[in-house]
Image 1 (tube, rainbow, N blue to C red):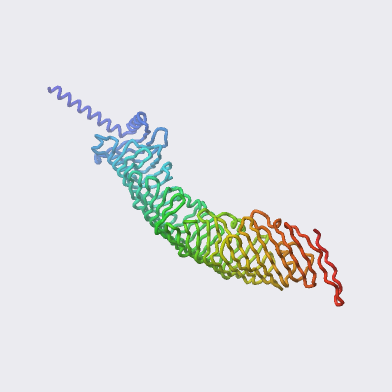
Image 2: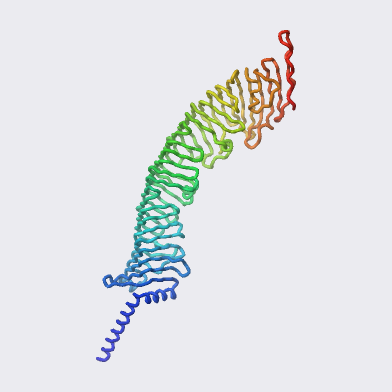
Length: 582
């Protein structure tokens, strides 16, 4: 019995010596290579570390130094200077579940191709780590990350697990191309629902704070978000800038506050923006709200050729549409003001009151094309219940027919300016007058116009202007049918008989001042020339009693021989004026 006892004692000593030798060998480079080689050979993972350190002052912790870990044939998932694995009694039943795993001074790449991890922990801690997730739909890159995930139970396609509490900070971060610094995130994950109880960051030289929730279907609920002193410059157009919002299944905004923001893109900019948005949901290119509102003001807003100064907008949202309580702005040296409603039913904009004053506005070169283009689907009708204009200067620099209206005043009632997505004057009445005007280098004074429009025709009941010596008066009718047939009757008294030459009528065989009468009709269509459709007759008589009649048929003119008055004793017969060659 003594022999057996001694044998067992020496066997125990030998086992302890072997274990002790193995313990020390594991903490050498040779031991580290052996262990990492065995794991890489017998599993689907590849691991390399320089040494393993264990200290009796912290007996439950194992430190791995200079660690590289990943799946076979894939980029490394983890590169860290130190990995601290905290053990507990649970290792007896679940050896791959650690109490804590602390990653320090390295990079963690979380990709769907790298999941699942073969181990888990009650707490995953990061200390001064870089964090990348290029394949998760977030396009996230963060540096100097410190924080933790508890518990950490990674699964395939779900790196952080189904249920966890998250608290992290990062010195810098880029999310979907947006850079931020000093980032703080606190929240939780619960079966695909990500709740961000606290979000804070320095972004675009400003700050962001708030809280939000992302549901399992990818929709977002932003309960509160505040942006302050943002200075952001984008390389995207305004439409592309907001395009990511249209890709979300749904975005519900409880409260959004923007203070003193400056945003800029290739053809747009907004300076010193203050905005408050409440209770609005965006979904699949549409929106919904029940009692929401939007208030905003800025120093400047630029979009293409539009340049608003000090714009102010206050609106309220409802299931029926948008109530525009106030819109005012300085624009083109003047002021615009309006209020009204956008109605969801019919996509109609009805402005109760619209006023423009003091403008100095040059029409864009393509204004005729813009007038002919179809409106967007959300705007099919535009109606001005009341319209006023005062002291405006409007200029068209079209080289073929330039014109200018000076000190333009006007008013209108129930003017429908868009119908079925097309601009026009579809209904209502209006009166316009100006102090002076120039039409293709012909100066006139006190031009005025009055019109009444209905579904079938636009009747211009009064059109008049004073020339240098006489007056022009006309009436006209414009059909609302697609052919846009126009009929005009014009009388001129004491005017240069060749005044219509500058406006497109052929040369007359007589000159001087006199009276003219014109009756003509044609089709004014954006897609076809006007001249081949014009037919009519012009009769002119000058102060010398010379008369001529010109007849135009489909744009071609025939001229009757001028009538020369009979000679008198006081005046010899005038030489006949030859007719122009046809």
